[in-house]
Amino acid sequence: MIRVLAVDDHPLLREGIAALIGSEEDMQLVGEASNGREAVDLFRKYQPDITLMDLQMPEMNGIDAIGAIRGEFPNARIIVLTTHPGDVQVSRAFKAGARGYLSKAMLRKELLETIRAVHAGQKRLSSEAAAGIAEHSTDSTLTPREIDVLRLIAAGNANKEIGARLSLTEVTVKSHVQNILGKLGANDRTHAVSIALKRGIIDL
Image 1 (cartoon, rainbow, N blue to C red):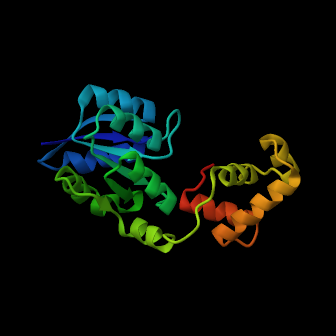
Image 2: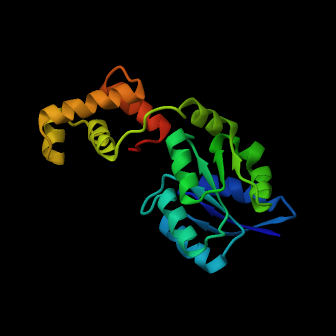
């Protein structure tokens, strides 16, 4: 029997997962969590074979929850479920210790097969996520400072305000913005934000 923990802040999605798993003879849903902190507590309590983990949740996000669980239980098998399979987010999830990555749009088709594959020791990546990684594999990555600047751009700040927030001169901020546009292949600031959100470099 494969014992599964479902972690997502949307009750409807958890209900859908429960229905899918409930119809299988070799699986059992042992617990449900609505944020990363609950996920860590329930993992300690149930020590499930497979954990299905959403990434964007209140209180503690999925990447941090994966890191916390794997810190205590290095053999934990975690499958990430996400609405946006951005390549940067995929890479972060695998670095944190995830063993599978599935778009929520494909749950009905691929969830059960992915659970069985990861339980058997395989790694699974949806074709959509794999294509995103391949497409950006040679891109220059943004530095932590550039990501800070990009987050402040996304929040609607002008260069002067960004400089004040990060203790940088306006000229330095302009230089960071130019680097960000170049690395992301963006036409302007708004375009850069939309690319970064899609790829999972930042989230709102």
